[in-house]
Length: 301
Length: 269
View 1 (cartoon, each protein chain N blue to C red):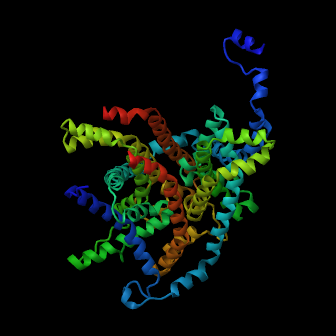
View 2: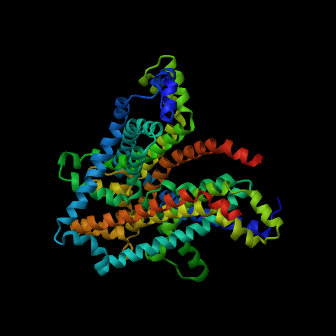
View 3: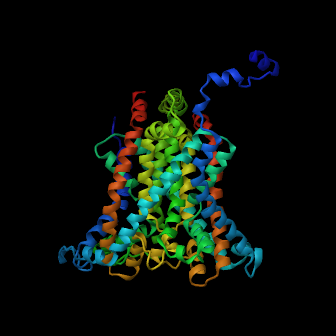
């Protein structure tokens, strides 16, 4: 009976009979699902959505009104800080990608004694707070640092760069390497070795194989880890805070505006803009790599 | 495999990168047990700085551990059911919610802390208690717990398992606690380790949310770097490493065990 009804409607609606046969009880009732969702929903709504919305509106109540959001472009100091932060993050991301692509590919392709120790070491700083990373830079390039000691012994002059832009760069690189290397290794493991063999058998040089087969295959992994690296660098605060550099990265500017100048609307506006930049960057890449799953195939062809 | 010049060049770069990571860690660990850093190791080794750090900062270390446990508790209660719903009811609404949930990771901690301060800064009893910091930590770590648990849940055949249990007469809560949760254990364990390590090391949010009476380990570290002698900062860092390293190592072992079957099949090819 019910079969006939389904046929008439042209699509297979779950009939009364089949709904009895398949144990529907297995799916939790909507009421139970709601109960399961409640703790998470409350946390996200009360401590994230409402505060964020409130801050976004609060900015409009400041002396400059909604124009506060444009200050990052119109105020020379904020604009300079934004450009510096963007340049710094982009530079660190490029550097980390190049280093980690070489090293990650090497660690995936070769088996040798001590390999897992090397991998473990490279991913060690993954959950170091920014302050500790800053301290690591001081240990490397500070007044009592290793690099200073080495150059002192070799040339009689201490090389100290922990507190200027090079030190900050080194610090950002330090916390970027673990993030990028893990992603590069994950996508390097998925590379199809047969494609490389095919390219080589067709007479491609080592360089051509790298450019035309390996790099396109790694690209989705490089892009997504690059985005994570870039977003992390944009928002990094602890490292710059510990090094107390004179370079004003955006998070430091926000911090100073909030604590020292009590300029809450500006601090809020700047942090919302910064949040938008990092979120947009991650979201764009996610949708890009989501659609670009065919990239390795295309690259190999 | 033939080992060419390229192999050794790559190995060299890898080792260089490892040294870049490890040398400052070793340096700071040594500085933490050296009598006088400015004279070097020749001045002798001592545990004096470790004890001094303990006297100065023990409360901040305990607060961090307490926060990590509380944070784990909250993320377990909120995160595991959340992961279940996200996996079991895929759709536009759940995807939107997942996006929302991961936002606190995507935006800088400073921005998040500012929003919390502006909204709840006036609630004095809450603002000055450790619960305020816990709020920030939960927001930041919850997505990691949910992701980790959801990954395991979507890999297991939850529908069949649940239907099997249901056909034997198990009600929802019985199924949830005796079938779903035990099967999702690897994900829960990995998520729990992640939550604890992240919470113990969290600085960006905590620095904004803390008060002089609610200092956590990383806040104390920043304080020590800024205003104490190098040896104290180093000794404190050493304590932090000793706390965090076992967690990191177990996490890595778990990850290796999880990915081993996949790697083995890749090699068989």
